[in-house]
Image 1 (cartoon, helix red, strand yellow):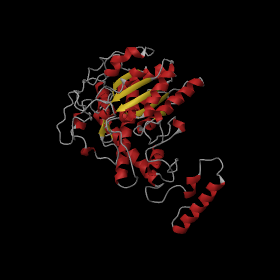
Image 2 (cartoon, rainbow, N blue to C red):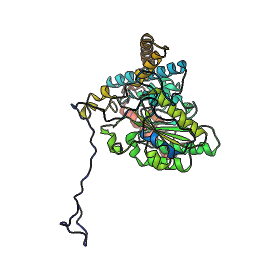
Image 3 (cartoon, rainbow, N blue to C red):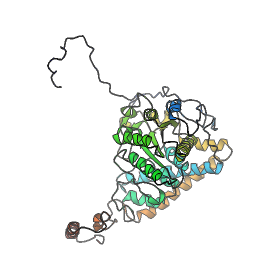
Image 4 (cartoon, rainbow, N blue to C red):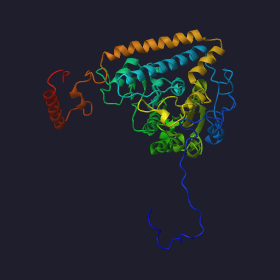
Length: 434
């Protein structure tokens, strides 16, 4: 520490000693878990304001918790979106498919078929239900745990698997880390490994849409840990100042890799409460309640389309599995947390709601899960024919120089020719055509 400057108070002066606070999670491996400190209000107890209301009127919604599904598996209160049974079954089907896809891809990584994967177990409603509340051509700027959006929008599973395997069928030509998809046709912006960069991009796209007089809005997803990045705060400022037609979805799943949400500010306040300081509309939502997720996203979408302003939504949920296949959560959190989480499992809650309505049963659920698993297995076999990690079935080596310039500059042509020549010299047999 630097010496005290001359003229400063003497060390013996009567001033209190400072101390540094370091956030610490309530439970570590081996601890007994007790989530009684989490306030879970009754389903249907939160008011639903007009979609064009002043953000200053939404303080209680930023600190409370919007819930629709009660312990009786029925929908309650003003946030009930009153979806028909067919829509609910479709929602459940997308969530079941997302979970089946995660299981198969996780297994593939453990078998050495790909280098990396990230599951969204326990968070399916925050992507599937939320995206169903948007128009199909609204532009989404996801983080790396929103595979449910692509599945809900009908993106072919084989394209997702080709990208994960970085094989010869990968439309991104192996240039992206596995699970960082991109699809212009599905209004799905390229996922980036640089955290929170998608937030100002979403706001900028929404501003451009408004400037052009378009009808499409933007929505972005970011983990609660990434809200500590400067990009997130820049996005909030621009969204408010320019009244951008955008939704900022914050997925508070309690953990950012091995550090808990307190390091991003969760000890002091809710993440939805950050909206208040910016003049944004703010909602805090039960992220394991598929109906609440849909209702909140639809409310925010209607608000944006009416030019009433942007919205920040905190989806309060739980990361049931590790951060990625490179992570072992048993090293930093209690194994009991997943089973003790007070908001349950989103797939089970939606299934039980449909059963309570008389529109579903356990037999049909079992059939749906089996069909989803078999479909993913079949498509995975098709994708594996295009190559898996280390099997040499990938895009020709020369393509690493393509798609940046319309016409390749002379110096890059020389580098490309040299690289291809050296590769052929070093590996004279078994090379794909280059």
